[in-house]
Amino acid sequence: MIITPQHIHEHNQKAKEEHAASFSALAGQLDGKGMAVEDLVNKVASFQVAIPSWALGTGGTRFGRFPMGGEPGSLEEKIEDVGLLHALNRSSGALSLHIPWDIPEDTKAVKALAREYDLVFDAVNSNTFQDQQEQEYSYKFGSLSHTDKAVRKQAVEHNLDVIRYGKELGSKALTVWLADGSNFPGQQNFRKALQRTQESLEEIYEQLPDDWQLLIEYKPYEPNFYSMVIPDWGTSFLLANKLGENARTLVDLGHHLPNTNIEQIVAILSMEQKLGGFHFNDSKYGDDDLTTGAIKPYQLFLIFSELIAGGGAGFTDQIAWMIDASHNVKDPLEDLLQSVDAINKAYAKALLIDREKLAEARMSNDPVAAQETLQDAFQTDVRPLLREARIANKAAAAPLKLYRDLGVRKQLIKKRGTKSIATGL
Ligand code: PSV
Ligand code: MN
Ligand code: MN
Image 1 (tube, rainbow, N blue to C red):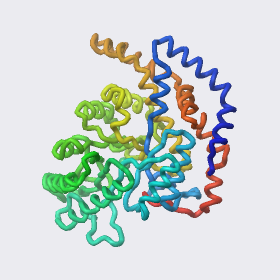
Image 2: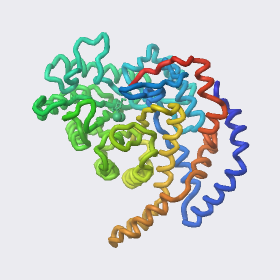
Image 3: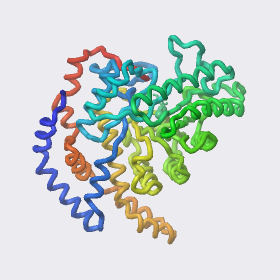
Image 4: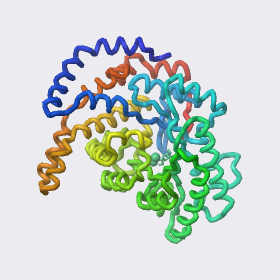
């Protein structure tokens, strides 16, 4: 065990005094505003974000990749890495698999190993955007939308296989992201491509277990640069509505054209009970997959504000939360710790919004008061609150610090070598 309860305990003992002072100052401030501090701590402490198996290695771009060593080479090692994160923050208790990058050979053993680290399996992801060696037909010109029925059938079958793996692991959702689309005007019949996609999704949906969700992810461009079959939330929402109650839209923060008002999309989807999943990351230009909260923390806060407004107390259990990021120059595990922290921060700050004041400001058409109300919450330093939640959960007061103090990456390199390569993009 790289991180033991003893490590956490010793680390927290050292942080105790400073933390007690900062938390009592914040608690006093919040209490004075009539907020139930204990309730806030409990909410933050129980919030869990899934870690994607493909974000545990160094990402890179199509120009190059600069691996840092100690990367997980097998599913078991990926579970170990997510276990490390969860031991440090107790907020990453789920793992999302991408098939066939992660084929569990012995699902029972894999499930048991995950249980040892207190992890469950979140949404399983299908992959019809790459050709696999043993596969009969190519996805070069699409998968679920392909003009050839045989290719569509192969892609449907793959999704059904993914559901089977997910069932054995205890997942409750299938995420479908399609790279299908076209690179040039005229190449594809938009209507027919969407119609065929819908029919293929219907075949998958028919086989979906009753207590599962089918999450439909959208993306405006890449890898196709003229059109994507599911380019936006409207198209995903349309498909989800046609399929039925258990089909929902998945919002990946990086899958929008610059300056899109994502919080408004979130508001509308959650109002319609069609927001099923989330892929957190941050971006400046496109699908940059940068650390969540690194570029636009205010946007993240506004998104959480809408989620809370729409979902009430139980909203955290109804949506599949996941990070979908890539790391070119950072240690992937450090990057993931930063992302989870930023997500918790945005969530905690959004919980601080004085909803009554905001409603009043809106009703009296007072944009100044509305902005002040949001800023009052956003400018609050919630770090002591997050720390308190972690300490209550027996996580590290400062996960990133403990990760570095223990030299986790060094230990992983020693165990796995400098040349290990993680599967995934
Ligand atoms: C596509 O850009 C995406 O966001 C989808 O969620 C894929 O499953 C994932 O990235 C693959 O890296
Ligand atoms: Mn994604
Ligand atoms: Mn993406």
